[in-house]
Image (cartoon, rainbow over all chains, first blue to last red; front, side, top):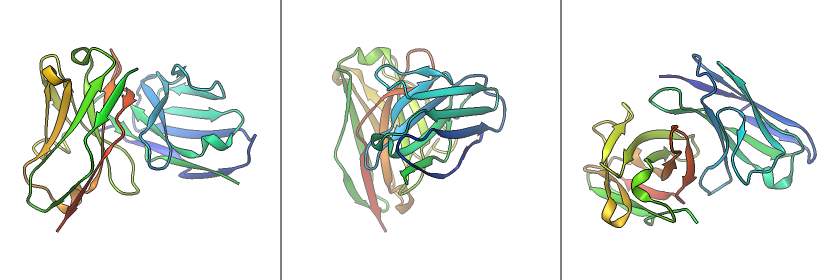
Length: 107
Length: 119
């Protein structure tokens, strides 16, 4: 199985800050990576697929990059509505696996 | 509007059986794979398996193979997740999600079903 490791596990930042979350794969997954946002008590929501493609309707302050084994999700200017936990997911091979999540809080 | 609407929360005892559902609407149900994802309390996401409602072709994660059964009834645009004998460790929120057309990420999610199993 491909292990996905996210860091940090928790992140505290101020409104307007640039926020970066990292996701590392235990083996190369090309660009087959998605990012999801999950707000408390809600279902996950797709933000990014194929490492850097923004899902329709997702604000442009979100961006993704990376290939191979290292990937990043960036929020250019953190907004109060971005308070959530973020998960990466590889879909290079089965079983599909997710990172452990990064909880983003407002400082 | 694409929607996946899941059945309501359930409370069961260890050893009991359970079947939860996920009804799709706003798109051609038989053209998209549906996956099931587990989220244990306070934990991350785990892929359980995926079904193609068009022909009921199903793939399971090795971690869940033999532990659950995934099925679908295309006549009512509904996918199911079933247990024959629940354990306390099955307590979790279970999400169904629509898989993207050609790739195995999930572009639409149900609201989740909380399953609580007491011992």
